[in-house]
Length: 407
Image 1 (cartoon, one colour):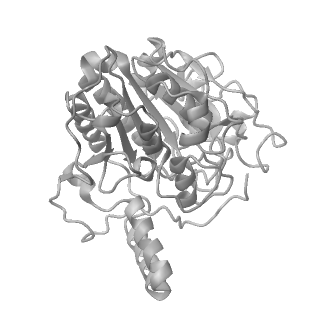
Image 2: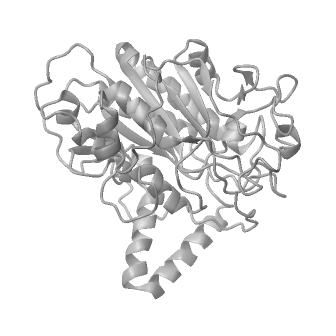
């Protein structure tokens, strides 16, 4: 896609940003969750969306090792089918990063799948704008007060048990994807009470419009803070699992929400990304630990659970001079849970030759992520294609739900 960025600065700054929120806060309730009787029915599905903020490298998470152009583009960090850099075989063409052993086991049990070469309609490289498009479910950037998951809740029939139980946002602020008129509650482990990228962006947006000079100074200060720490901070693998466990326990309660969103920061790997070992491997290992926590905590309800993992965009096909990857376009989405019809990699593979890359640099998107969202919402919540096209993802009638994702 776009020209390779060589700047060490990145707008997706992970705020430790002490002082914006009280460090001792461990629970947040943005709106009150109504306690209402469940509607009749035997199936009690759970649907959790995990957002990897910072743009996760799909070509390293699920590597196309049989593509003849892959290894040369990834010199030094490429995975292989065997040897010291071996990934975990999936289907003969793709291998999974070896840090993701839980996902591999679920894949073999046909409870996990991958959608490769996927992207939202967004084709630029701003984290903030990319995340907005990802979370609003709209075809482009714009000021929108609601996210597609909240609109999906509102599209359910009045009195539906999932709607009456509302949604759950894990973190210090309500994720945009979950904002709207449907009831939402929030919870955050103590360490997650530090301000995150979403809050940072909205503070910056406020001052950009009311006090540009202050906004400029704040941005410079955030960059300096980040650089003083040696760049983007790694997500804590233990916190990933802790947040996953807490969310699942709340969703397991009889009166608890059935829909949730959880975000993990730190996926912007411009430098020292690593291959089998390294920064990205640590992040993927932490994510895999969260998968194990979900499976354990959901227990007997795992059979009716679907967990969708997405990121705002991918990264460049070719690594840069610091053994990292810059902002790209297509990437992977992952789906796991007992309700998932797994054991597959779904990909209309575009190829990695220079002439096949988007703008000569990125994996070309061949699947619109909205088709994945629609497929999961249709299978888990029973929403019709018409409702999805008109109410949940307005103006998306040409984007059909990806069928067969849910058993």
